[in-house]
Image (tube, rainbow over all chains, first blue to last red; front, side, top):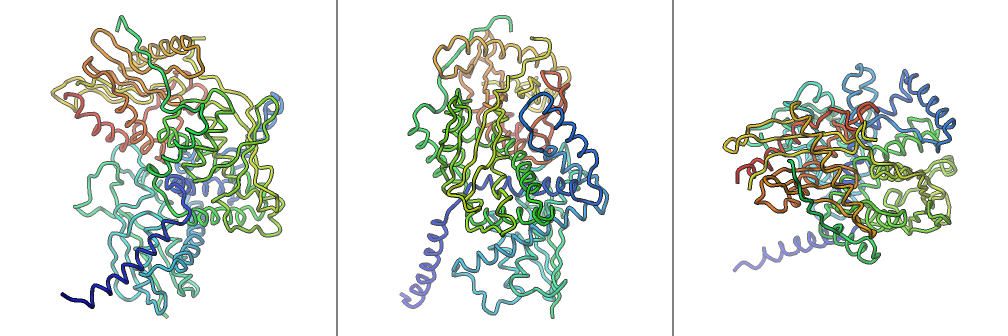
Length: 255
Length: 205
Length: 159
Protein backbone atom coordinates (compact mmCIF):
# COMPACT_ATOMS: atom_id res chain seq x y z
CA UNK A 1 0.00 0.00 0.00
CA UNK A 2 1.17 3.49 -0.78
CA UNK A 3 1.15 5.73 2.21
CA UNK A 4 2.43 9.11 1.00
CA UNK A 5 -0.05 9.96 -1.66
CA UNK A 6 -3.33 9.26 0.14
CA UNK A 7 -2.56 11.66 3.00
CA UNK A 8 -1.69 14.36 0.48
CA UNK A 9 -5.02 13.88 -1.25
CA UNK A 10 -6.76 13.87 2.08
CA UNK A 11 -5.29 17.22 2.98
CA UNK A 12 -6.36 18.69 -0.30
CA UNK A 13 -9.72 17.04 0.15
CA UNK A 14 -10.05 18.41 3.64
CA UNK A 15 -9.35 21.92 2.39
CA UNK A 16 -11.91 21.34 -0.35
CA UNK A 17 -14.48 20.10 2.10
CA UNK A 18 -13.85 23.01 4.45
CA UNK A 19 -14.25 25.42 1.58
CA UNK A 20 -17.45 23.72 0.50
CA UNK A 21 -18.90 23.81 4.01
CA UNK A 22 -17.96 27.45 4.29
CA UNK A 23 -19.68 28.20 0.96
CA UNK A 24 -22.78 26.38 2.09
CA UNK A 25 -22.89 28.30 5.33
CA UNK A 26 -22.97 31.67 3.53
CA UNK A 27 -26.29 33.48 3.26
CA UNK A 28 -28.29 32.49 0.21
CA UNK A 29 -31.12 33.74 -1.96
CA UNK A 30 -33.20 31.88 -4.50
CA UNK A 31 -31.66 31.38 -7.93
CA UNK A 32 -34.88 32.38 -9.64
CA UNK A 33 -34.93 35.94 -8.26
CA UNK A 34 -31.30 36.33 -9.31
CA UNK A 35 -32.14 35.10 -12.81
CA UNK A 36 -35.08 37.47 -13.02
CA UNK A 37 -32.92 40.38 -11.92
CA UNK A 38 -30.42 39.55 -14.68
CA UNK A 39 -33.22 39.13 -17.24
CA UNK A 40 -34.74 42.49 -16.39
CA UNK A 41 -31.41 44.32 -16.79
CA UNK A 42 -31.90 44.37 -20.56
CA UNK A 43 -35.37 45.98 -20.67
CA UNK A 44 -34.19 48.28 -17.86
CA UNK A 45 -31.34 49.52 -20.03
CA UNK A 46 -33.72 50.22 -22.91
CA UNK A 47 -36.15 52.07 -20.62
CA UNK A 48 -33.31 54.20 -19.25
CA UNK A 49 -32.13 54.96 -22.78
CA UNK A 50 -35.62 56.20 -23.64
CA UNK A 51 -35.41 58.63 -20.74
CA UNK A 52 -31.83 59.88 -20.90
CA UNK A 53 -30.66 59.06 -24.42
CA UNK A 54 -29.98 61.39 -27.32
CA UNK A 55 -33.66 61.80 -28.10
CA UNK A 56 -35.57 61.12 -24.94
CA UNK A 57 -39.01 60.08 -26.11
CA UNK A 58 -41.12 63.22 -26.14
CA UNK A 59 -44.20 61.05 -26.47
CA UNK A 60 -43.61 59.29 -23.20
CA UNK A 61 -43.39 62.61 -21.39
CA UNK A 62 -46.70 63.94 -22.65
CA UNK A 63 -48.54 60.68 -22.14
CA UNK A 64 -47.39 60.41 -18.54
CA UNK A 65 -48.49 63.99 -17.95
CA UNK A 66 -51.93 63.11 -19.32
CA UNK A 67 -52.06 60.05 -17.09
CA UNK A 68 -51.23 62.25 -14.15
CA UNK A 69 -53.99 64.70 -14.94
CA UNK A 70 -56.40 61.86 -15.50
CA UNK A 71 -55.45 60.29 -12.20
CA UNK A 72 -55.95 63.55 -10.35
CA UNK A 73 -59.21 64.23 -12.17
CA UNK A 74 -60.63 60.82 -11.35
CA UNK A 75 -59.37 61.11 -7.80
CA UNK A 76 -57.44 57.85 -8.04
CA UNK A 77 -54.27 57.24 -6.17
CA UNK A 78 -51.20 58.56 -7.92
CA UNK A 79 -49.74 55.99 -10.24
CA UNK A 80 -45.99 55.71 -10.03
CA UNK A 81 -44.37 55.71 -13.45
CA UNK A 82 -44.34 52.29 -14.96
CA UNK A 83 -42.40 51.29 -18.05
CA UNK A 84 -43.72 49.35 -21.03
CA UNK A 85 -43.71 45.55 -20.53
CA UNK A 86 -40.28 43.90 -20.66
CA UNK A 87 -40.81 42.11 -23.97
CA UNK A 88 -41.83 45.37 -25.67
CA UNK A 89 -38.67 47.08 -24.48
CA UNK A 90 -36.52 44.23 -25.78
CA UNK A 91 -38.36 44.37 -29.10
CA UNK A 92 -37.67 48.10 -29.15
CA UNK A 93 -33.95 47.35 -28.90
CA UNK A 94 -34.13 44.89 -31.78
CA UNK A 95 -35.43 47.51 -34.21
CA UNK A 96 -33.47 50.50 -32.85
CA UNK A 97 -30.82 52.25 -34.91
CA UNK A 98 -27.17 51.35 -34.47
CA UNK A 99 -26.31 54.32 -32.24
CA UNK A 100 -29.11 53.64 -29.81
CA UNK A 101 -28.19 49.99 -29.63
CA UNK A 102 -24.59 50.83 -28.91
CA UNK A 103 -25.60 53.11 -26.06
CA UNK A 104 -27.85 50.43 -24.57
CA UNK A 105 -25.11 47.85 -24.89
CA UNK A 106 -22.56 50.19 -23.33
CA UNK A 107 -24.87 50.52 -20.32
CA UNK A 108 -25.16 46.74 -19.95
CA UNK A 109 -21.43 46.32 -20.47
CA UNK A 110 -20.73 48.86 -17.77
CA UNK A 111 -22.98 47.06 -15.28
CA UNK A 112 -21.28 43.78 -16.20
CA UNK A 113 -17.90 45.39 -15.67
CA UNK A 114 -18.81 46.40 -12.14
CA UNK A 115 -20.18 42.93 -11.42
CA UNK A 116 -16.96 41.39 -12.73
CA UNK A 117 -14.73 43.61 -10.59
CA UNK A 118 -16.66 42.91 -7.40
CA UNK A 119 -17.09 39.24 -8.18
CA UNK A 120 -13.38 38.62 -8.59
CA UNK A 121 -12.73 40.34 -5.25
CA UNK A 122 -15.36 38.13 -3.70
CA UNK A 123 -13.80 34.99 -5.14
CA UNK A 124 -10.28 36.03 -4.20
CA UNK A 125 -11.24 36.47 -0.57
CA UNK A 126 -13.19 33.23 -0.46
CA UNK A 127 -10.12 31.09 0.40
CA UNK A 128 -10.84 28.66 -2.37
CA UNK A 129 -8.00 26.10 -2.16
CA UNK A 130 -8.12 25.75 -5.94
CA UNK A 131 -7.19 29.35 -6.47
CA UNK A 132 -3.80 30.89 -6.15
CA UNK A 133 -3.72 34.45 -7.33
CA UNK A 134 -0.01 34.94 -6.84
CA UNK A 135 1.84 34.88 -10.14
CA UNK A 136 -1.31 34.22 -12.06
CA UNK A 137 -0.65 34.23 -15.77
CA UNK A 138 -3.24 35.17 -18.35
CA UNK A 139 -4.18 31.60 -19.18
CA UNK A 140 -4.81 30.83 -15.51
CA UNK A 141 -6.99 33.92 -15.22
CA UNK A 142 -9.00 32.85 -18.25
CA UNK A 143 -9.45 29.39 -16.78
CA UNK A 144 -10.58 31.04 -13.55
CA UNK A 145 -13.20 32.97 -15.56
CA UNK A 146 -14.35 29.86 -17.40
CA UNK A 147 -14.69 27.81 -14.25
CA UNK A 148 -15.23 29.88 -11.11
CA UNK A 149 -16.73 33.11 -12.43
CA UNK A 150 -19.08 31.32 -14.81
CA UNK A 151 -20.15 28.85 -12.16
CA UNK A 152 -21.02 31.62 -9.73
CA UNK A 153 -22.91 33.66 -12.30
CA UNK A 154 -24.58 30.99 -14.40
CA UNK A 155 -24.33 27.76 -12.42
CA UNK A 156 -22.20 26.08 -15.07
CA UNK A 157 -18.74 26.26 -16.61
CA UNK A 158 -17.72 27.45 -20.04
CA UNK A 159 -17.90 24.43 -22.36
CA UNK A 160 -14.78 25.04 -24.39
CA UNK A 161 -11.80 27.41 -24.24
CA UNK A 162 -9.58 28.05 -27.23
CA UNK A 163 -6.54 30.27 -27.40
CA UNK A 164 -3.69 31.16 -29.77
CA UNK A 165 -1.45 31.75 -26.71
CA UNK A 166 -0.88 35.30 -27.90
CA UNK A 167 -3.73 37.00 -26.08
CA UNK A 168 -6.71 35.82 -28.11
CA UNK A 169 -9.26 33.60 -26.41
CA UNK A 170 -12.54 32.07 -27.47
CA UNK A 171 -14.87 31.02 -24.67
CA UNK A 172 -17.67 28.80 -25.96
CA UNK A 173 -20.87 28.45 -23.99
CA UNK A 174 -23.26 26.04 -25.69
CA UNK A 175 -25.88 26.42 -22.99
CA UNK A 176 -25.68 30.09 -22.04
CA UNK A 177 -28.17 30.13 -19.19
CA UNK A 178 -29.74 33.61 -19.38
CA UNK A 179 -31.16 32.89 -22.85
CA UNK A 180 -32.30 29.30 -22.35
CA UNK A 181 -35.91 30.18 -21.58
CA UNK A 182 -36.09 32.87 -24.26
CA UNK A 183 -37.92 32.12 -27.49
CA UNK A 184 -40.12 33.55 -30.21
CA UNK A 185 -42.22 31.47 -32.61
CA UNK A 186 -40.84 28.77 -34.87
CA UNK A 187 -37.18 28.56 -35.81
CA UNK A 188 -34.70 31.15 -34.65
CA UNK A 189 -35.08 34.29 -36.75
CA UNK A 190 -32.89 37.35 -37.25
CA UNK A 191 -35.34 39.28 -35.09
CA UNK A 192 -34.89 36.81 -32.26
CA UNK A 193 -31.11 36.96 -32.53
CA UNK A 194 -31.36 40.75 -32.41
CA UNK A 195 -33.45 40.46 -29.27
CA UNK A 196 -31.00 38.20 -27.44
CA UNK A 197 -28.04 40.29 -28.59
CA UNK A 198 -28.07 42.61 -25.54
CA UNK A 199 -28.13 39.56 -23.24
CA UNK A 200 -24.61 38.74 -24.43
CA UNK A 201 -23.27 42.11 -23.38
CA UNK A 202 -23.46 41.59 -19.60
CA UNK A 203 -20.93 38.70 -19.52
CA UNK A 204 -18.65 40.62 -21.90
CA UNK A 205 -18.53 43.31 -19.24
CA UNK A 206 -18.03 40.73 -16.51
CA UNK A 207 -15.05 39.15 -18.30
CA UNK A 208 -13.50 42.57 -18.78
CA UNK A 209 -14.12 43.49 -15.15
CA UNK A 210 -12.43 40.35 -13.85
CA UNK A 211 -9.39 40.88 -16.07
CA UNK A 212 -9.21 44.51 -15.05
CA UNK A 213 -9.24 43.71 -11.36
CA UNK A 214 -6.55 41.07 -11.81
CA UNK A 215 -4.03 43.45 -13.30
CA UNK A 216 -4.89 43.63 -16.97
CA UNK A 217 -5.94 47.19 -16.51
CA UNK A 218 -4.06 49.30 -19.04
CA UNK A 219 -6.26 51.49 -21.20
CA UNK A 220 -7.94 49.49 -23.97
CA UNK A 221 -5.87 46.45 -23.02
CA UNK A 222 -8.86 44.15 -22.96
CA UNK A 223 -11.69 43.86 -25.44
CA UNK A 224 -14.47 41.34 -25.53
CA UNK A 225 -17.34 40.73 -27.86
CA UNK A 226 -19.80 37.92 -28.24
CA UNK A 227 -21.03 36.16 -31.35
CA UNK A 228 -23.68 33.53 -31.93
CA UNK A 229 -22.32 30.18 -33.12
CA UNK A 230 -23.84 26.88 -34.20
CA UNK A 231 -24.03 24.15 -31.60
CA UNK A 232 -21.75 21.14 -31.98
CA UNK A 233 -23.63 18.07 -33.27
CA UNK A 234 -23.68 16.43 -29.85
CA UNK A 235 -25.59 19.30 -28.27
CA UNK A 236 -28.45 20.03 -30.64
CA UNK A 237 -32.12 19.33 -30.31
CA UNK A 238 -32.62 19.39 -26.57
CA UNK A 239 -36.03 20.61 -25.53
CA UNK A 240 -36.26 24.10 -24.16
CA UNK A 241 -32.71 24.98 -24.94
CA UNK A 242 -31.61 27.82 -27.16
CA UNK A 243 -30.63 26.34 -30.52
CA UNK A 244 -27.46 28.42 -30.78
CA UNK A 245 -24.29 28.64 -28.74
CA UNK A 246 -22.35 31.75 -27.79
CA UNK A 247 -18.69 32.48 -28.36
CA UNK A 248 -17.13 35.17 -26.18
CA UNK A 249 -14.09 36.48 -28.03
CA UNK A 250 -11.55 38.03 -25.69
CA UNK A 251 -8.53 39.97 -26.87
CA UNK A 252 -5.85 40.92 -24.37
CA UNK A 253 -2.96 43.08 -25.54
CA UNK A 254 0.17 41.74 -23.92
CA UNK A 255 2.54 44.40 -22.71
CA UNK B 1 -71.61 18.36 -23.56
CA UNK B 2 -75.28 18.49 -22.75
CA UNK B 3 -75.38 17.28 -19.20
CA UNK B 4 -72.80 17.67 -16.52
CA UNK B 5 -72.31 16.68 -12.96
CA UNK B 6 -70.19 19.00 -10.90
CA UNK B 7 -67.54 17.29 -8.87
CA UNK B 8 -66.62 19.91 -6.37
CA UNK B 9 -63.89 19.41 -3.83
CA UNK B 10 -62.74 21.50 -0.98
CA UNK B 11 -59.51 22.76 0.43
CA UNK B 12 -56.43 24.65 -0.76
CA UNK B 13 -53.03 22.98 -0.76
CA UNK B 14 -52.15 24.59 2.54
CA UNK B 15 -54.20 26.19 5.22
CA UNK B 16 -53.17 29.80 5.61
CA UNK B 17 -55.18 30.19 8.77
CA UNK B 18 -52.48 28.85 11.03
CA UNK B 19 -49.43 31.08 11.22
CA UNK B 20 -47.22 28.24 12.31
CA UNK B 21 -48.11 25.96 9.43
CA UNK B 22 -47.34 28.68 6.90
CA UNK B 23 -43.90 29.07 8.43
CA UNK B 24 -43.22 25.33 8.38
CA UNK B 25 -44.59 25.09 4.85
CA UNK B 26 -42.31 27.92 3.64
CA UNK B 27 -39.26 26.57 5.47
CA UNK B 28 -39.71 23.27 3.70
CA UNK B 29 -39.90 24.94 0.28
CA UNK B 30 -36.82 27.03 1.03
CA UNK B 31 -34.80 24.13 2.44
CA UNK B 32 -35.78 21.36 0.08
CA UNK B 33 -37.24 22.75 -3.11
CA UNK B 34 -35.34 25.92 -3.92
CA UNK B 35 -32.17 26.30 -5.97
CA UNK B 36 -29.93 28.84 -4.25
CA UNK B 37 -27.03 31.16 -4.96
CA UNK B 38 -24.77 33.15 -2.66
CA UNK B 39 -26.55 36.24 -1.41
CA UNK B 40 -23.39 38.28 -1.92
CA UNK B 41 -23.56 37.70 -5.65
CA UNK B 42 -27.12 38.96 -5.62
CA UNK B 43 -26.13 41.98 -3.52
CA UNK B 44 -23.27 42.99 -5.78
CA UNK B 45 -25.32 42.53 -8.94
CA UNK B 46 -28.09 44.73 -7.59
CA UNK B 47 -25.47 47.23 -6.42
CA UNK B 48 -24.09 47.45 -9.95
CA UNK B 49 -27.57 48.19 -11.28
CA UNK B 50 -28.26 50.95 -8.75
CA UNK B 51 -24.90 52.56 -9.29
CA UNK B 52 -25.38 52.52 -13.07
CA UNK B 53 -28.77 54.21 -12.67
CA UNK B 54 -27.25 56.89 -10.43
CA UNK B 55 -24.76 57.63 -13.21
CA UNK B 56 -27.36 57.53 -15.98
CA UNK B 57 -29.73 59.88 -14.19
CA UNK B 58 -26.85 62.12 -13.08
CA UNK B 59 -27.60 61.51 -9.44
CA UNK B 60 -31.21 62.62 -9.71
CA UNK B 61 -32.22 60.13 -7.05
CA UNK B 62 -35.95 60.58 -7.46
CA UNK B 63 -35.58 59.32 -11.00
CA UNK B 64 -33.46 56.43 -9.77
CA UNK B 65 -36.18 55.53 -7.26
CA UNK B 66 -38.80 55.57 -10.02
CA UNK B 67 -36.67 53.44 -12.32
CA UNK B 68 -35.99 50.85 -9.62
CA UNK B 69 -39.70 50.71 -8.91
CA UNK B 70 -40.53 50.27 -12.60
CA UNK B 71 -37.92 47.52 -12.88
CA UNK B 72 -39.42 45.74 -9.90
CA UNK B 73 -42.93 46.09 -11.25
CA UNK B 74 -42.06 44.28 -14.46
CA UNK B 75 -40.33 41.55 -12.45
CA UNK B 76 -43.27 41.23 -10.04
CA UNK B 77 -45.72 40.50 -12.88
CA UNK B 78 -43.67 37.39 -13.73
CA UNK B 79 -42.37 36.46 -10.30
CA UNK B 80 -45.89 35.92 -8.97
CA UNK B 81 -46.37 32.96 -11.33
CA UNK B 82 -43.14 31.39 -10.10
CA UNK B 83 -44.34 31.97 -6.54
CA UNK B 84 -47.76 30.41 -7.11
CA UNK B 85 -46.26 27.48 -8.97
CA UNK B 86 -44.01 26.74 -5.98
CA UNK B 87 -46.62 27.25 -3.29
CA UNK B 88 -49.97 26.41 -4.95
CA UNK B 89 -51.53 28.98 -2.64
CA UNK B 90 -55.02 30.26 -3.40
CA UNK B 91 -56.03 33.90 -3.26
CA UNK B 92 -56.13 35.32 0.24
CA UNK B 93 -59.49 36.32 1.68
CA UNK B 94 -58.18 39.23 3.70
CA UNK B 95 -55.29 41.65 3.59
CA UNK B 96 -54.16 40.25 6.93
CA UNK B 97 -53.65 36.87 5.28
CA UNK B 98 -51.98 38.50 2.30
CA UNK B 99 -49.51 40.21 4.62
CA UNK B 100 -48.69 36.88 6.29
CA UNK B 101 -48.14 35.17 2.95
CA UNK B 102 -45.89 38.00 1.75
CA UNK B 103 -43.71 38.05 4.84
CA UNK B 104 -43.60 34.41 5.91
CA UNK B 105 -43.77 32.79 2.51
CA UNK B 106 -42.78 35.06 -0.39
CA UNK B 107 -39.87 36.84 1.29
CA UNK B 108 -38.81 33.53 2.82
CA UNK B 109 -38.64 31.41 -0.30
CA UNK B 110 -37.09 34.08 -2.52
CA UNK B 111 -34.79 36.02 -0.19
CA UNK B 112 -34.66 33.79 2.90
CA UNK B 113 -35.87 36.52 5.20
CA UNK B 114 -39.07 37.13 7.13
CA UNK B 115 -39.99 40.77 7.61
CA UNK B 116 -42.29 41.56 10.52
CA UNK B 117 -45.80 42.69 9.73
CA UNK B 118 -46.86 45.64 11.87
CA UNK B 119 -48.36 49.13 12.08
CA UNK B 120 -51.80 48.14 10.85
CA UNK B 121 -54.22 50.95 10.18
CA UNK B 122 -57.48 50.83 12.11
CA UNK B 123 -59.52 49.58 9.21
CA UNK B 124 -56.86 47.01 8.25
CA UNK B 125 -56.11 48.39 4.81
CA UNK B 126 -52.55 49.59 5.42
CA UNK B 127 -49.67 47.67 6.97
CA UNK B 128 -45.90 47.79 7.24
CA UNK B 129 -43.18 45.28 6.53
CA UNK B 130 -40.22 45.79 8.84
CA UNK B 131 -37.02 44.48 7.27
CA UNK B 132 -34.51 43.45 9.92
CA UNK B 133 -32.17 42.20 7.27
CA UNK B 134 -32.07 42.87 3.56
CA UNK B 135 -29.90 40.94 1.11
CA UNK B 136 -30.20 43.76 -1.43
CA UNK B 137 -28.31 46.19 0.75
CA UNK B 138 -25.94 44.11 2.90
CA UNK B 139 -22.67 45.99 3.47
CA UNK B 140 -23.94 48.91 1.38
CA UNK B 141 -23.12 52.44 2.43
CA UNK B 142 -24.80 55.37 0.74
CA UNK B 143 -22.73 58.38 -0.26
CA UNK B 144 -23.75 61.62 1.45
CA UNK B 145 -25.65 63.08 -1.48
CA UNK B 146 -27.79 59.95 -1.82
CA UNK B 147 -28.64 59.38 1.82
CA UNK B 148 -31.56 61.79 1.89
CA UNK B 149 -33.26 60.93 -1.39
CA UNK B 150 -32.35 57.48 -2.61
CA UNK B 151 -34.53 54.53 -1.62
CA UNK B 152 -31.84 52.00 -2.35
CA UNK B 153 -34.07 48.89 -2.25
CA UNK B 154 -37.03 50.49 -4.03
CA UNK B 155 -37.13 47.57 -6.47
CA UNK B 156 -38.88 45.62 -3.67
CA UNK B 157 -41.83 48.04 -3.73
CA UNK B 158 -42.18 47.59 -7.48
CA UNK B 159 -42.05 43.81 -7.21
CA UNK B 160 -44.77 43.83 -4.53
CA UNK B 161 -46.90 46.23 -6.56
CA UNK B 162 -46.66 44.12 -9.73
CA UNK B 163 -47.15 40.79 -8.01
CA UNK B 164 -50.18 41.92 -6.01
CA UNK B 165 -51.79 43.51 -9.03
CA UNK B 166 -51.74 40.10 -10.71
CA UNK B 167 -53.87 38.69 -7.89
CA UNK B 168 -56.28 41.63 -8.21
CA UNK B 169 -54.93 43.70 -5.33
CA UNK B 170 -54.42 47.31 -6.34
CA UNK B 171 -51.91 48.61 -3.81
CA UNK B 172 -49.55 51.47 -3.21
CA UNK B 173 -46.17 50.34 -1.90
CA UNK B 174 -43.44 52.66 -0.67
CA UNK B 175 -40.50 52.93 1.70
CA UNK B 176 -40.92 55.11 4.75
CA UNK B 177 -37.53 54.46 6.34
CA UNK B 178 -34.27 52.67 5.61
CA UNK B 179 -31.33 51.82 7.84
CA UNK B 180 -29.06 52.93 4.98
CA UNK B 181 -30.33 56.47 5.61
CA UNK B 182 -29.59 56.19 9.30
CA UNK B 183 -33.13 55.23 10.28
CA UNK B 184 -33.81 52.81 13.15
CA UNK B 185 -35.16 50.18 10.81
CA UNK B 186 -36.22 49.66 7.22
CA UNK B 187 -39.94 49.88 6.70
CA UNK B 188 -42.08 49.29 3.63
CA UNK B 189 -45.65 50.53 3.72
CA UNK B 190 -48.38 48.70 1.80
CA UNK B 191 -51.77 50.29 1.25
CA UNK B 192 -54.64 48.45 -0.37
CA UNK B 193 -56.59 50.81 -2.62
CA UNK B 194 -59.13 48.33 -3.86
CA UNK B 195 -59.66 44.74 -4.82
CA UNK B 196 -59.91 44.58 -8.59
CA UNK B 197 -62.92 42.75 -9.96
CA UNK B 198 -62.35 39.62 -11.97
CA UNK B 199 -63.21 40.31 -15.58
CA UNK B 200 -66.23 38.69 -17.14
CA UNK B 201 -66.74 38.21 -20.88
CA UNK B 202 -68.07 41.25 -22.75
CA UNK B 203 -71.85 41.22 -22.99
CA UNK B 204 -72.34 39.06 -19.90
CA UNK B 205 -72.99 41.92 -17.49
CA UNK C 1 -56.30 7.05 -20.57
CA UNK C 2 -56.94 9.37 -23.46
CA UNK C 3 -56.49 13.11 -23.49
CA UNK C 4 -58.54 14.96 -26.06
CA UNK C 5 -57.53 18.56 -25.65
CA UNK C 6 -55.85 21.27 -23.58
CA UNK C 7 -57.16 24.80 -23.10
CA UNK C 8 -55.58 27.74 -21.29
CA UNK C 9 -57.50 30.89 -20.38
CA UNK C 10 -56.06 34.08 -18.93
CA UNK C 11 -57.53 36.57 -16.46
CA UNK C 12 -59.01 38.52 -19.35
CA UNK C 13 -61.31 35.57 -20.17
CA UNK C 14 -59.29 34.96 -23.33
CA UNK C 15 -58.23 31.56 -24.58
CA UNK C 16 -54.46 31.99 -24.88
CA UNK C 17 -53.64 28.44 -25.93
CA UNK C 18 -55.53 25.46 -27.30
CA UNK C 19 -54.37 22.07 -28.48
CA UNK C 20 -56.73 19.42 -29.72
CA UNK C 21 -55.79 15.91 -30.73
CA UNK C 22 -58.04 14.24 -33.30
CA UNK C 23 -56.57 10.83 -34.06
CA UNK C 24 -55.47 8.56 -31.27
CA UNK C 25 -53.25 6.73 -33.71
CA UNK C 26 -51.42 9.88 -34.66
CA UNK C 27 -50.21 12.00 -31.77
CA UNK C 28 -49.17 14.77 -34.12
CA UNK C 29 -52.67 15.11 -35.55
CA UNK C 30 -55.15 17.77 -34.63
CA UNK C 31 -54.80 21.49 -34.21
CA UNK C 32 -52.85 24.02 -32.18
CA UNK C 33 -54.23 27.50 -31.55
CA UNK C 34 -56.89 26.90 -34.16
CA UNK C 35 -59.34 29.54 -35.29
CA UNK C 36 -61.98 26.82 -35.63
CA UNK C 37 -61.80 26.23 -31.91
CA UNK C 38 -62.80 29.75 -30.95
CA UNK C 39 -66.42 28.84 -30.33
CA UNK C 40 -65.59 25.69 -28.42
CA UNK C 41 -63.20 27.70 -26.29
CA UNK C 42 -65.96 30.17 -25.44
CA UNK C 43 -68.30 27.32 -24.48
CA UNK C 44 -65.69 25.68 -22.26
CA UNK C 45 -64.97 29.04 -20.67
CA UNK C 46 -68.67 29.57 -20.01
CA UNK C 47 -69.11 26.13 -18.51
CA UNK C 48 -66.20 26.51 -16.11
CA UNK C 49 -67.22 30.07 -15.29
CA UNK C 50 -70.78 29.06 -14.38
CA UNK C 51 -69.89 26.02 -12.31
CA UNK C 52 -67.16 27.99 -10.60
CA UNK C 53 -69.63 30.69 -9.59
CA UNK C 54 -72.05 28.08 -8.26
CA UNK C 55 -69.32 26.31 -6.30
CA UNK C 56 -68.25 29.64 -4.83
CA UNK C 57 -71.81 30.40 -3.77
CA UNK C 58 -72.32 26.95 -2.24
CA UNK C 59 -69.38 27.24 0.09
CA UNK C 60 -70.47 29.25 3.09
CA UNK C 61 -67.29 28.97 5.08
CA UNK C 62 -64.21 31.08 4.50
CA UNK C 63 -62.10 28.69 2.51
CA UNK C 64 -62.38 28.76 -1.23
CA UNK C 65 -64.31 26.15 -3.09
CA UNK C 66 -62.49 25.66 -6.38
CA UNK C 67 -63.92 23.47 -9.10
CA UNK C 68 -61.56 20.65 -10.09
CA UNK C 69 -63.32 18.19 -12.37
CA UNK C 70 -66.57 18.02 -14.26
CA UNK C 71 -67.82 14.74 -15.71
CA UNK C 72 -70.34 14.15 -18.48
CA UNK C 73 -71.45 10.88 -20.04
CA UNK C 74 -68.35 10.70 -22.21
CA UNK C 75 -65.90 13.32 -21.08
CA UNK C 76 -64.18 14.56 -18.03
CA UNK C 77 -62.90 18.12 -17.75
CA UNK C 78 -59.98 18.68 -15.38
CA UNK C 79 -59.48 22.22 -14.19
CA UNK C 80 -56.72 24.14 -12.46
CA UNK C 81 -57.37 27.78 -11.55
CA UNK C 82 -54.44 29.86 -10.30
CA UNK C 83 -54.62 32.90 -8.04
CA UNK C 84 -53.51 34.99 -11.03
CA UNK C 85 -56.68 34.02 -12.87
CA UNK C 86 -55.20 31.47 -15.24
CA UNK C 87 -57.35 28.45 -16.03
CA UNK C 88 -55.82 25.25 -17.35
CA UNK C 89 -58.41 22.81 -18.67
CA UNK C 90 -57.83 19.29 -20.00
CA UNK C 91 -60.59 17.22 -21.59
CA UNK C 92 -60.07 13.48 -21.23
CA UNK C 93 -62.04 10.25 -21.32
CA UNK C 94 -63.73 9.03 -18.14
CA UNK C 95 -61.04 6.55 -17.13
CA UNK C 96 -58.82 9.20 -15.63
CA UNK C 97 -60.37 10.53 -12.45
CA UNK C 98 -57.80 13.06 -11.48
CA UNK C 99 -55.27 14.84 -13.67
CA UNK C 100 -54.49 17.59 -11.18
CA UNK C 101 -50.83 16.57 -11.06
CA UNK C 102 -50.64 16.85 -14.85
CA UNK C 103 -52.22 20.30 -14.78
CA UNK C 104 -49.91 21.40 -12.00
CA UNK C 105 -46.89 20.20 -13.97
CA UNK C 106 -48.03 22.12 -17.04
CA UNK C 107 -48.34 25.26 -14.94
CA UNK C 108 -45.25 25.05 -12.79
CA UNK C 109 -42.78 23.49 -15.19
CA UNK C 110 -43.93 24.49 -18.67
CA UNK C 111 -45.91 27.71 -18.25
CA UNK C 112 -43.61 29.26 -15.65
CA UNK C 113 -40.43 28.33 -17.51
CA UNK C 114 -41.47 29.12 -21.04
CA UNK C 115 -44.04 31.90 -20.62
CA UNK C 116 -43.34 33.67 -17.32
CA UNK C 117 -39.57 33.32 -17.72
CA UNK C 118 -39.55 34.08 -21.44
CA UNK C 119 -38.57 37.72 -21.43
CA UNK C 120 -39.06 37.91 -25.23
CA UNK C 121 -42.75 37.18 -24.92
CA UNK C 122 -45.64 38.82 -23.04
CA UNK C 123 -46.94 37.82 -19.62
CA UNK C 124 -50.17 39.70 -20.28
CA UNK C 125 -51.69 38.77 -23.62
CA UNK C 126 -54.21 41.59 -23.80
CA UNK C 127 -52.45 44.69 -25.07
CA UNK C 128 -55.44 47.02 -25.13
CA UNK C 129 -58.79 47.34 -23.39
CA UNK C 130 -60.40 45.99 -26.59
CA UNK C 131 -58.50 42.75 -26.14
CA UNK C 132 -59.81 42.13 -22.64
CA UNK C 133 -63.02 40.46 -21.47
CA UNK C 134 -62.88 37.54 -23.86
CA UNK C 135 -62.30 39.65 -26.95
CA UNK C 136 -58.59 39.00 -27.37
CA UNK C 137 -57.13 36.55 -29.85
CA UNK C 138 -53.43 36.47 -29.00
CA UNK C 139 -51.99 33.05 -28.25
CA UNK C 140 -48.92 31.54 -26.68
CA UNK C 141 -46.95 30.57 -29.75
CA UNK C 142 -43.33 30.48 -28.65
CA UNK C 143 -41.42 27.40 -29.68
CA UNK C 144 -40.32 26.28 -26.22
CA UNK C 145 -43.84 26.27 -24.83
CA UNK C 146 -45.47 24.59 -27.84
CA UNK C 147 -42.79 21.89 -27.89
CA UNK C 148 -42.88 21.50 -24.13
CA UNK C 149 -46.62 20.82 -24.16
CA UNK C 150 -46.27 18.48 -27.10
CA UNK C 151 -43.51 16.43 -25.53
CA UNK C 152 -45.28 16.19 -22.18
CA UNK C 153 -48.83 15.45 -23.29
CA UNK C 154 -48.46 13.49 -26.53
CA UNK C 155 -47.60 10.23 -24.78
CA UNK C 156 -50.85 10.55 -22.80
CA UNK C 157 -53.04 11.04 -25.84
CA UNK C 158 -53.26 7.33 -26.54
CA UNK C 159 -52.18 5.53 -23.43
